[in-house]
Length: 213
Image 1 (cartoon, rainbow, N blue to C red):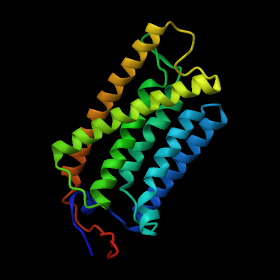
Image 2 (cartoon, rainbow, N blue to C red; image 1 turned 180 degrees about the vertical axis):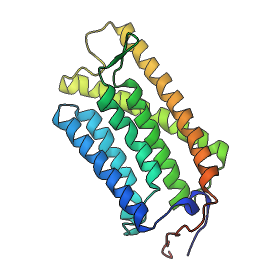
Image 3 (cartoon, rainbow, N blue to C red; image 1 turned 180 degrees about the horizontal axis):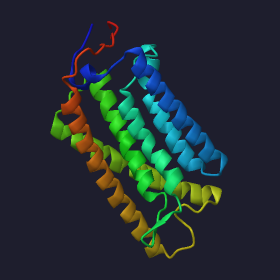
Image 4 (tube, helix red, strand yellow; image 1 turned 135 degrees about the vertical axis):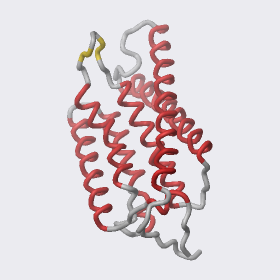
């Protein structure tokens, strides 16, 4: 059975797309392993989680060419690269931390999930719902990320949240984290809509075969 819905028509399963996609994933994996090696275990785990989500289609279909558009994967790699480049840099007196890039990473993961749902499952998402889905998914992931950091601080003695600041300062920073995640989620959702409208009518796309139940 073949399905031609939404972004499915925008998935180029030709060999060039697959090669580029796997190359991007290999690069992201290398970045994640480097982060783990320098002591950023949580960040490395987050990036590896994104890689795991991205390889679900080829694993599920047992087809290495059943890969998301390489542009989506390249977009998902940007926060990981950006965090490596800007962490600790100062621009206009403002010192960058991992906050911006972290929630951009969370938002791009939500974007990848949305694309996978629309491309590889019977789920139908119109433009408005897609924006809401990506935004809410990003916000939910931000909440999970906050819990993970808190547990790491209390159980492993790290200082991701509990770094010696006053309680109100930690709470304020956490709320700004949620604000950043919401903004990043909205941006990713709007990008999904734009990508969907731009690529849905693309020609010469290979449809993934879905086995009969």
